[in-house]
Image: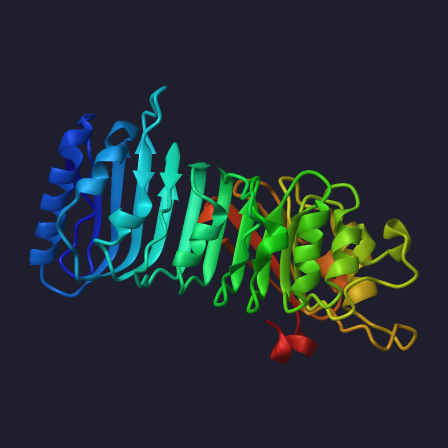
Length: 358
């Protein structure tokens, strides 16, 4: 095993298991947990296990409980063999009763068994893999606030069991299948990312119609998806678009509407591999930011526009273009979210609306 990133105060611990025999995994990890329990302090910032997939099935035998508060518990698999090994999440997480964030990376198969346990997990990230148990079993995470699912699949629930995630506020789904949209209820959901490079399925649209409290939405600019979201979530206050098809925000004829969509929109984020020209921005700003007396009185001025682009791309708004964009401040920064670690922001804020900007 190799330990890295060790600090004595709120340490970050990453454990890499190099052996491949499952029968040793639980014994070795039990020793790691015992060692972490002996450290000073009651908090671990990051506890990460980087394991060969062949060890996954053996982790159910971990026999030591960790009473410390863990801000982030991360489990990732490498060297995926042809014969898959199931990672039994529920009994394993039972040994870590005070975890705030749980991240599962590239596990070939994940089983989430139903158990009457209290979970402190508020954020769950599943990146890659096949979940062998129904999506309904996620209700075991009774305190879940953030759920992110990327390139993962869930089996179809023949019983159409209702699942209620009553504390969930942030749902992010990227290229994943098997989510029972018609049976999923999230009464406190305010943010959703739904990146799908095809038309939204009707079941997902029915889910969106039930969740009119959503205020921020992230989509891929594909086909009529922008028009579709405008029809089912007209009350959005923040919109993020991956790609270039956002022109309907300033020209309603592009999405076949008589008025501009999202009348209450205050923030727009454009995520693109190729940042758009300032000419495009001028049209957008004229229609949504610098409102005139002829503008729709129900239209709220757009207060912030952010262009996200890969680090190394040349994107800069020159002074002449800035004067045409009106009274705004321009700030360049790096994107804070881990998913966009090597991306940059160019953020335009309009001074007259800065007080209420989000």
